[in-house]
Image 1 (cartoon, one colour):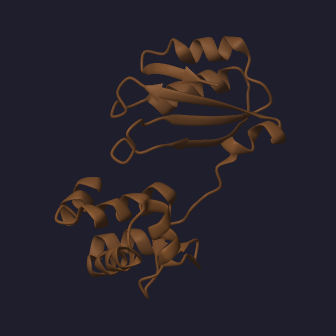
Image 2 (tube, helix red, strand yellow):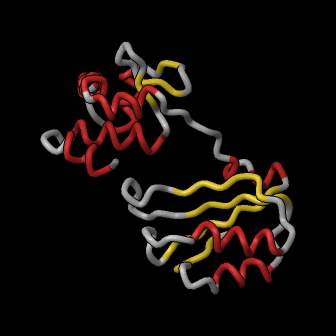
Length: 166
Protein backbone atom coordinates (compact mmCIF):
# COMPACT_ATOMS: atom_id res chain seq x y z
CA UNK A 1 0.00 0.00 0.00
CA UNK A 2 2.78 2.44 0.85
CA UNK A 3 4.18 2.23 -2.69
CA UNK A 4 0.78 3.30 -4.07
CA UNK A 5 0.61 6.18 -1.59
CA UNK A 6 4.17 7.26 -2.37
CA UNK A 7 3.40 7.15 -6.09
CA UNK A 8 0.16 9.12 -5.68
CA UNK A 9 1.88 11.88 -3.67
CA UNK A 10 5.28 11.85 -5.40
CA UNK A 11 4.56 15.22 -7.01
CA UNK A 12 3.98 16.95 -3.66
CA UNK A 13 6.46 16.50 -0.80
CA UNK A 14 4.26 18.56 1.51
CA UNK A 15 1.18 16.40 0.86
CA UNK A 16 3.34 13.29 1.16
CA UNK A 17 4.35 14.54 4.62
CA UNK A 18 0.69 14.99 5.58
CA UNK A 19 -0.40 11.54 4.39
CA UNK A 20 2.53 9.91 6.20
CA UNK A 21 1.59 11.76 9.41
CA UNK A 22 -2.03 10.62 9.09
CA UNK A 23 -0.99 6.99 8.65
CA UNK A 24 1.58 7.03 11.45
CA UNK A 25 -1.03 8.34 13.88
CA UNK A 26 -4.03 6.32 12.75
CA UNK A 27 -5.88 9.42 11.57
CA UNK A 28 -8.62 9.02 9.01
CA UNK A 29 -10.52 11.28 6.65
CA UNK A 30 -14.32 11.53 6.67
CA UNK A 31 -16.53 11.90 3.60
CA UNK A 32 -16.50 15.69 4.01
CA UNK A 33 -12.70 15.79 3.71
CA UNK A 34 -11.99 16.44 7.39
CA UNK A 35 -9.21 14.67 9.28
CA UNK A 36 -10.63 12.46 12.02
CA UNK A 37 -9.59 10.23 14.88
CA UNK A 38 -12.20 7.53 15.41
CA UNK A 39 -14.84 9.80 13.94
CA UNK A 40 -13.87 12.93 15.88
CA UNK A 41 -12.79 15.79 13.64
CA UNK A 42 -9.34 17.31 14.15
CA UNK A 43 -8.95 20.87 12.83
CA UNK A 44 -6.62 21.14 9.84
CA UNK A 45 -4.79 23.96 11.61
CA UNK A 46 -3.81 21.56 14.41
CA UNK A 47 -2.48 18.96 11.96
CA UNK A 48 -0.64 21.68 10.04
CA UNK A 49 0.93 23.05 13.21
CA UNK A 50 2.07 19.57 14.28
CA UNK A 51 3.93 18.93 11.02
CA UNK A 52 4.91 22.52 10.24
CA UNK A 53 2.90 23.04 7.09
CA UNK A 54 -0.05 25.13 5.96
CA UNK A 55 -3.63 24.04 6.75
CA UNK A 56 -4.45 24.30 3.05
CA UNK A 57 -1.96 21.52 2.38
CA UNK A 58 -3.79 19.35 4.93
CA UNK A 59 -7.15 20.14 3.33
CA UNK A 60 -5.83 19.49 -0.19
CA UNK A 61 -4.33 16.18 0.94
CA UNK A 62 -7.63 15.07 2.48
CA UNK A 63 -9.49 15.93 -0.74
CA UNK A 64 -6.91 14.08 -2.81
CA UNK A 65 -7.32 11.02 -0.58
CA UNK A 66 -11.10 11.12 -1.14
CA UNK A 67 -10.61 11.33 -4.92
CA UNK A 68 -8.49 8.14 -4.97
CA UNK A 69 -10.75 5.05 -4.57
CA UNK A 70 -8.22 2.84 -2.75
CA UNK A 71 -6.99 5.59 -0.44
CA UNK A 72 -10.56 6.69 0.22
CA UNK A 73 -11.40 3.16 1.37
CA UNK A 74 -8.34 3.04 3.64
CA UNK A 75 -8.69 6.46 5.23
CA UNK A 76 -12.46 6.51 5.69
CA UNK A 77 -12.13 3.24 7.64
CA UNK A 78 -9.01 4.12 9.65
CA UNK A 79 -9.26 3.59 13.44
CA UNK A 80 -6.77 4.56 16.12
CA UNK A 81 -6.19 2.31 19.13
CA UNK A 82 -4.74 3.24 22.54
CA UNK A 83 -1.04 2.68 23.07
CA UNK A 84 -0.61 1.21 26.56
CA UNK A 85 3.19 1.47 26.48
CA UNK A 86 3.18 4.99 27.90
CA UNK A 87 0.91 3.89 30.76
CA UNK A 88 2.54 0.54 31.42
CA UNK A 89 4.32 1.33 34.66
CA UNK A 90 1.25 2.82 36.34
CA UNK A 91 -0.84 -0.17 35.18
CA UNK A 92 1.64 -2.76 36.45
CA UNK A 93 2.64 -3.81 32.94
CA UNK A 94 6.01 -4.39 31.28
CA UNK A 95 7.02 -3.23 27.82
CA UNK A 96 9.58 -4.85 25.59
CA UNK A 97 10.57 -3.14 22.34
CA UNK A 98 12.18 -5.35 19.73
CA UNK A 99 14.10 -3.95 16.78
CA UNK A 100 14.38 -6.59 14.04
CA UNK A 101 17.41 -7.31 11.89
CA UNK A 102 15.14 -7.26 8.82
CA UNK A 103 11.60 -5.93 9.33
CA UNK A 104 10.46 -7.62 6.12
CA UNK A 105 11.35 -11.07 7.43
CA UNK A 106 8.45 -13.35 8.33
CA UNK A 107 8.00 -14.86 11.78
CA UNK A 108 9.34 -12.08 14.01
CA UNK A 109 6.10 -11.60 15.92
CA UNK A 110 5.45 -15.35 16.16
CA UNK A 111 8.91 -16.08 17.54
CA UNK A 112 8.62 -13.41 20.25
CA UNK A 113 5.09 -14.49 21.19
CA UNK A 114 6.22 -18.13 21.49
CA UNK A 115 8.92 -17.12 23.96
CA UNK A 116 6.54 -15.03 26.06
CA UNK A 117 3.70 -17.54 26.03
CA UNK A 118 6.18 -20.32 26.77
CA UNK A 119 6.76 -18.62 30.12
CA UNK A 120 3.02 -18.40 30.79
CA UNK A 121 2.91 -14.61 30.60
CA UNK A 122 -0.24 -12.76 29.53
CA UNK A 123 0.17 -10.42 26.57
CA UNK A 124 -1.98 -7.31 26.88
CA UNK A 125 -1.06 -5.58 23.64
CA UNK A 126 1.16 -6.01 20.60
CA UNK A 127 1.83 -3.48 17.91
CA UNK A 128 4.25 -3.31 15.04
CA UNK A 129 5.35 -0.18 13.26
CA UNK A 130 5.12 -0.56 9.51
CA UNK A 131 8.58 -0.91 7.95
CA UNK A 132 7.46 1.26 5.02
CA UNK A 133 6.28 4.11 7.21
CA UNK A 134 8.82 4.06 10.01
CA UNK A 135 12.52 4.78 9.85
CA UNK A 136 13.08 2.36 12.71
CA UNK A 137 10.49 -0.43 12.54
CA UNK A 138 9.87 -2.16 15.84
CA UNK A 139 7.69 -4.68 17.60
CA UNK A 140 6.26 -3.58 20.94
CA UNK A 141 4.86 -6.19 23.32
CA UNK A 142 3.15 -5.28 26.57
CA UNK A 143 2.67 -7.99 29.18
CA UNK A 144 1.08 -8.27 32.60
CA UNK A 145 3.57 -7.95 35.45
CA UNK A 146 7.34 -8.07 35.25
CA UNK A 147 9.32 -9.70 32.48
CA UNK A 148 11.65 -12.34 33.93
CA UNK A 149 15.29 -11.90 32.84
CA UNK A 150 15.19 -15.33 31.15
CA UNK A 151 12.42 -14.14 28.80
CA UNK A 152 14.42 -11.06 27.86
CA UNK A 153 17.52 -13.17 27.18
CA UNK A 154 15.57 -15.64 25.05
CA UNK A 155 14.05 -12.85 22.97
CA UNK A 156 17.43 -11.12 22.66
CA UNK A 157 18.89 -14.34 21.23
CA UNK A 158 16.23 -14.89 18.58
CA UNK A 159 17.87 -14.80 15.13
CA UNK A 160 15.44 -12.12 13.91
CA UNK A 161 16.28 -9.70 16.74
CA UNK A 162 18.83 -6.90 16.39
CA UNK A 163 18.10 -5.06 19.65
CA UNK A 164 15.84 -5.29 22.70
CA UNK A 165 14.86 -2.26 24.77
CA UNK A 166 12.98 -2.38 28.06
